[in-house]
Image (tube, rainbow, N blue to C red; front, side, top):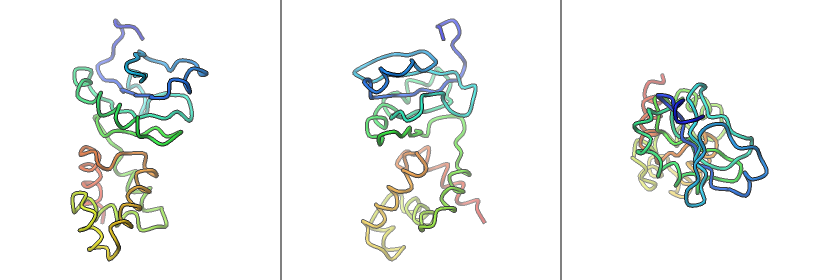
Length: 172
């Protein structure tokens, strides 16, 4: 992608492991390197960015180019804490698959769906969520960590939580 071909909307991907990426071909898109992080700007022509399998990082979008500056730091921060081999979606974009997330949580055998619902209802308060669920706050923390890993999203991101909350509220 060159500057003349910049799209109206794009994904912004942050990949913190430069040594891991050195052995692989460069991801498609406009690649920028800053402070040891590779940023990739990709045209939002598909539902997800196109990246090598098993990379660690985070991505946001699709988002209008004029708003990319709003998400750069957050995408980089989430990328730095992403587990090895996981690409986490940061909730910035035009659409989020919240209904899919609810389906994934419903299919999980542990009480993740109810824990996430209560956690969001209490605005991330571990203690209050634990009281309502009848479990210790550390059990809530553990389940929320499982949900984050399972969904590949940051449940502390207000864009993610708002969409997920609305999807949970519309569920019968």
